[in-house]
Length: 398
Image 1 (cartoon, one colour):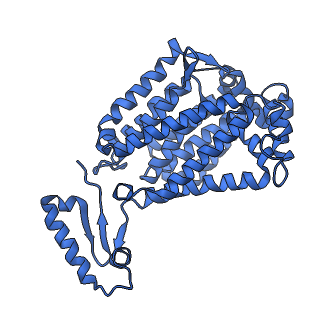
Image 2 (image 1 turned 90 degrees about the horizontal axis):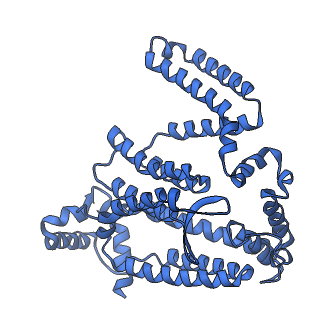
Image 3 (image 1 turned 135 degrees about the horizontal axis):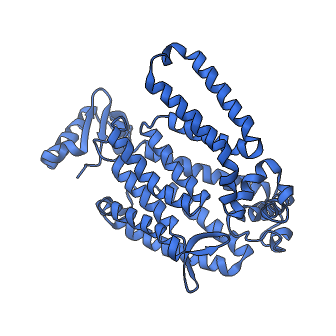
């Protein structure tokens, strides 16, 4: 079937397999929610088919509108949002709830992809760099103000995509340092943290003295960095108190231990580990988990659904699930990396005529020449010759 040409059948098969397995496990712990998720899955497949047959140019043109709409939905949470489980990041319409941050993620992905695909995109250009960071930062800041730290990590992942496009690794280093100071300052007296910062800064200055000497901008940068990190160390305990209770306890559990919160946020974690461990090698069987079926893990149909997998499907089932996710993510990465790869003459001959056929490489060149003649002036936008290798087939920039 010609319409199916170019479809990544392995990727789609893995996606359907993972979705069905997820719905089956959700149904195991909460039947009505499993049925609801099945309906949503059917709707998503229908919408996916519509998107597949639509022109990609539509999403390029609409990316800015979808992006702005997602940001506005996030802003609307402040006056109109409904608080669920300690977070005011939902809209509620009768019995239906909607989490707008999911739309913001899609809008940000489309907007960033559209901007990066521009042929003049170059992160060495400051305007391009600042625009790219702003696309991610604007919804990220709103999400932080909600606050929804979990979703903020997703927006942080967009920076990794920019790293692939040439974003300096220094940015990730700075983020890591600030995060480390924040976490350490919660567990240790901030005074000790400030002393450590000053010692490290002094060592850095000593090792780079001749580079720093006389460089005013370098000196200002060091002073500002030390000042900001010192202020963060003293402000970390205050920032922690302003976080929602469940998010605060998730951070505190890192150094206080989950047993200290066994009656609050640590309860789910403790019983989830119990459920996963009780599954053994092959699991207890579908709907046979004593911990999950006994509802010892509240809200287990959420992020804690893996405890159901561990108890009912065991170590083998859990391993297979993780491997499927790894293959699926690896497949996406492979396709992204090879979207504009060069196809050699030998590969084209093998795919089109098979090496068993007596075809010369000159035959391929003649066909490419004919194809270029058919395309006319637009040929250069689609086909590019890579000397001594083969051809690159490209998507034209309209």
